[in-house]
Length: 99
Image (cartoon, rainbow, N blue to C red; front, top):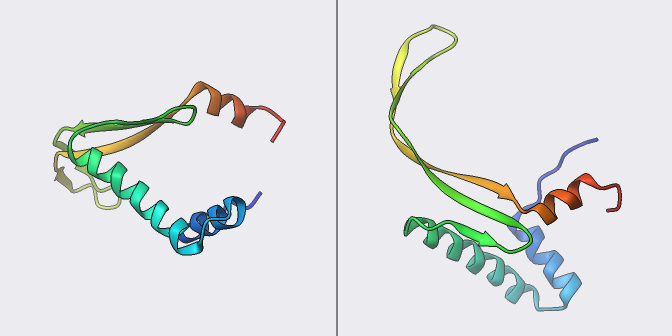
């Protein structure tokens, strides 16, 4: 099975086709939704979308890493990362044969 990636533009096009909003409105909607999610992360908030999942913001501490090719140690700086935890409903949908 070949995996493919869907883009913001393709999501906007699918909203346009399935719901009937104008293409410009659909594209702006997707952009605004993503900007809203990003702005909540900047406020150190998690984002929960009911029946879909939780986008969780975590802090990673500074640590020592090693380049596997030449084994030179380097410091990996502290940073924030986002992880996704799917809802039970979403997990069940993915794991059933009915799609």
